[in-house]
Image 1 (cartoon, rainbow, N blue to C red):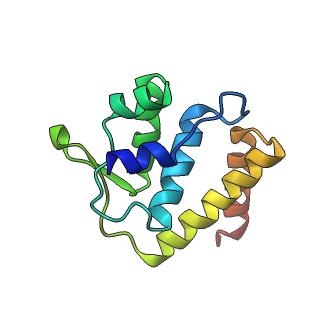
Image 2 (cartoon, rainbow, N blue to C red):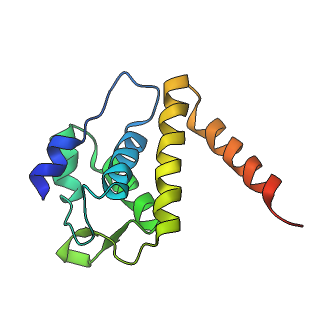
Length: 128
């Protein structure tokens, strides 16, 4: 699976979107649409960083955020894998989030502003 991921992910150094976010969004899309099925082993942080010519901390941040979102799981020395147990609602939201992130990047909206807009929208629909 390592080779497939390497080919499918690219980072645009001239983009206003930070490299870790480019990696995170692309991996989330690959997971969300099934191109990276549950149980797929991802490259090590160091390997993917070397392949993309990024700092290891950049890839590690993308992996951490995907793990926090429930899309990846780290099994210690065994590696990082696409997490099982996602449900349809989470998958649908992930696809919507990936689309939103891509549109925000296309429009040149900084990630902090895009996140603030999502937080405001969530607050607006929260009962209370």
